[in-house]
Image (tube, rainbow, N blue to C red; front, side, top):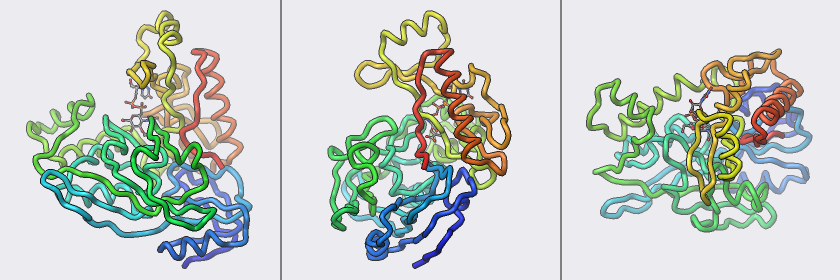
Length: 336
Ligand code: EPU
């Protein structure tokens, strides 16, 4: 097991701020994970691919990387197959593996950075599909007891970029494996999202396969979102705000072109990217941080960003959106 002291965290979180962890352990098996969690250091945090977490300062505790590996088809039915993947598997590689096995359902979630174990925590979603749509169950190690518990869909309380593991269960479990229900041929495709349709038309594809859809998603994402290998970022930095119908009516009076989508409980979801863009942040650079030129919702590290710079930018974006639209943006990313 990899153990190190004063580990440089810049390579363990995709935003890439140069910070250090007092101690760092990489767990490749459940046993190693248990061993790491029993470390006498009280302050601990478990990370996956580091794409939804930003370390803005040195971490005075133990950082445990969930690196559990393995994926397999566990059951086969007439129209579906159940697939289980370990928590440390790279999400995008898992998507590609499923496509290769001709299993559909997660092709719209191609190229999302991070790991399989992190995916249910914020119920990852893109282009009309959310993880909850294909989710069956997960196994998680309870930190307090060291016991493995099974969570079915109803136990996870999935919502837009949210779950039990971001609320009551926060910091209490490590997701060791996730089981998905995927479709055999003929696949049920979800190509209703405008930009996917446009991309498929551009490629002159009339009868798309799951591979075509994944390629379309990869093309769209690569155009709009920066590659974290090249430009430090953690995807959408804020959640798309969900507001009441009444608040929306007020907003609509002043901004009739505001992009909006129906949300749960007859609420309205707005596009944080649009709100931030309207405040003039798109492409703006302040010191070593800024908003990406093709997607205002993505904050990027221009090189040597510091936690203080990032915090200042986040505060300024939130306050300008609040003063222009009277809307409070909430971070989607975990700031540590
Ligand atoms: N827009 C702007 N300015 C911009 C970017 C977008 O005005 O700079 C407008 C667009 O014209 C559109 C609206 O904002 O009307 C929404 O933009 P987009 O379709 O790009 O999607 P998004 O709501 O910004 C969400 C997810 C993404 C996911 C895409 C596609 C959240 C917080 N973000 O972005 O997820 O890839 O939809 O489904 O829900 C992530 O979570 O890290 C992530 C990238």
